[in-house]
Amino acid sequence: MNLPVAELLTFFARHGRELPWREKSAGPWGVLVSEVMLQQTPVSRVLATYRDWLRRWPTPAALAADSPGEAVRAWGRLGYPRRALRLHAAAVAITQRHDGRVPRDLGDLLALPGVGDYTARAVAAFAFGARVPVVDTNVRRVVNRLVRGIDDGGPAGAADRALLAELLPADASTAAALSVALMEFGALVCRASPKCDDCPVRDRCRWLTAGKPAATVTRRPQAWHGTDRQVRGRIMAVLRASPGPVPTADLDAVWPVAEQRRRCLDSLLADGLAVRRDPDSVALPGG
Image (cartoon, rainbow, N blue to C red; front, side):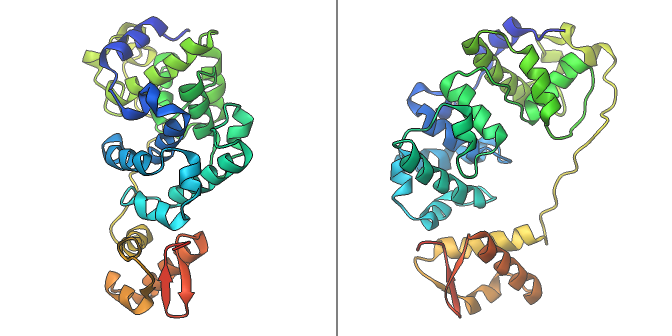
């Protein structure tokens, strides 16, 4: 079975959201920044930080010239702040190895620090129009329902990329456009709770024809309250708000459980998101 390419492209042309990283002016750097920010983070939370980031650091060289601590500070409350460190490291590598230009070759993209398989493929397709399969949760869900006739919430893997590689149109520019359309279709219509009545390709959907069989794999939402992630986030908020080192004693108010608080601080130090300035204070890296 083939994907309904024309219908999906028409859907995107009519209903695709106008997002800043989809504008031509965003360029490859804007696409890379957006893809890193959008990992496990919804579009609505990313928009303001993305715009501020590109105003401050419009090129990889601009970010590379600043400290990694400032990147972490500007990351704000997007969550998973190690992404800020990885983006800074990628900017340094782009500046040093590629004359400040985001590379278009997939191998060169994969060689950038902190750039994984999905991000490299997304940049290759969305910034450079390459014919490469880009599979996130939304795309996997759409392809599973339309082509495989199943519904599950498992993570994307090599088999999903191989299948999409077979389904993509031969023309690179059309394939890249379809990749965006699939992603948007999964975000707006073919969602975890699908809007089948509004689906323009429902007559082509094997899952719908089969009577919407129950999901074979479901993903449980991650807990937050009381977890180390919450404690780490509170510590990072204090460090971002301070112009200089923070006495470790001042972090006692962050969380009442001392053992968990110490464990989380130690993990931030190990991840490079915080550094000791002296035995009794910590700060953002490079600050």
